[in-house]
Amino acid sequence: MAEADRPNILALIPARGGSKGLPGKNILPLAGKPLIQWSIEAAHGSRFMTRVVVSSDDPAILAVARAAGAETPFVRPAELAQDDTPSMDVVLHALDQLPPVDWVVLLQPTSPLRSAEDIDQAIARCLETGAPACVSVSESPALPWWMFRVDATGRLVPFLDAAQRPQRRQEAPTLYTLNGAVYVARVEWLRKTRSFLSEETVAHVMPAERSVDIDTALDFRLAECLLAAQPEV
Image (cartoon, rainbow, N blue to C red; front, top):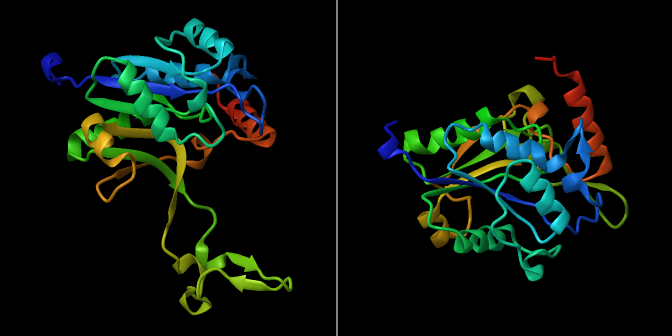
């Protein structure tokens, strides 16, 4: 791609300071690095990225982000750093604070095992197909035909009609779930849809071992184990 034709792409890493499930998780040390640094380094490793910006309300997170090489050109307002703040509001706020860009890539710091290659492949899917958005997914280990509710009497009630259930698990179609690692969208389109997901969105499939989304101490431990098992380069 010629330099003149290269799109202006922003990597946005949202990291608020008020995590309750795992306090301070965005800067907890994971295999020798603050958690957020894994996403910053993956963004810098992308061949497409123009800027890498962290959006946070927390001075400690912003300081760690700067030390890791990210830009922190603004402080996120407290009202956009609540438990129930929609992530889209955070993305649009950041876009409003910065010079115009063509594309935005949302990289949640809770997905430290996602690679620069994952980011590039998701962006390339959009550029090559003309799709306005791409999100990362992984194969779902749980299938709806084998899911149940528990009623008031304690009995299992199939989530889907049992008559629809395949005779053998091997006959069930492969299903995918959002893994939270990479969200790519054309900015003009995103401002109109206010969502990365639409009928036009394409998928980048990632393996389970790179799809850990850290929300609890157990998730953090799993990420540590997976990193420890990686061969040294």
